[in-house]
Length: 218
Image (cartoon, rainbow, N blue to C red; front, side, top):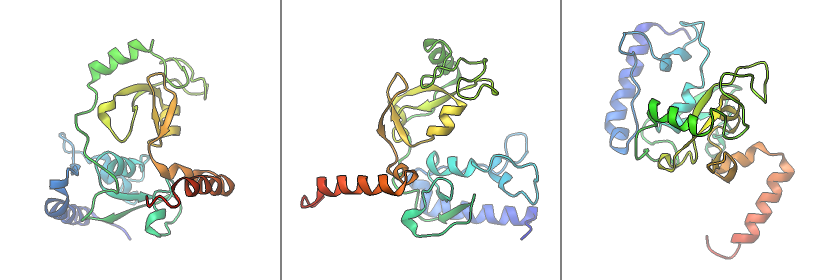
């Protein structure tokens, strides 16, 4: 179905009304339809029939994990609890009355640019996880120049701080794990990461947890 500009505004107005009624007081953030210059934000770029050069469809992922919208993705496997079967490489807005399960508003704003520059200097402008140096070929993917990004040490709690990660590591680890200051994985942030393992590993994890919690009432 082709959407025109009027359709986009009507959908956005509906979402805004529902947000005010159910989600605003729970800390969910409403993205703007346009930026300060009047151009469309990446939020609307998913409409490829209107904007064929759309490339960042993962913006929907950020709306879920960072802003609280109940959006699920076929690629991230965060839809299994809903028993909804999604088409390949697709996103679905599940509810306009409930935030993303387990999501809580961040307790402070993100790292300022100048603070991130200081953080990168502390790490000698290298990725805390793989050691790739900013501005030089990436150690994991030499065909790409290393760019450092702010990465949460604990995606569940922004107050735990940040480490610099290259795009390759940040994209690979996403919001699955908890890191220490040395960029090492020390815990799991999202238990659904286990769904990325093969069936045998998933069964082994199930047996481990079953033995741990069986009879405890937890």
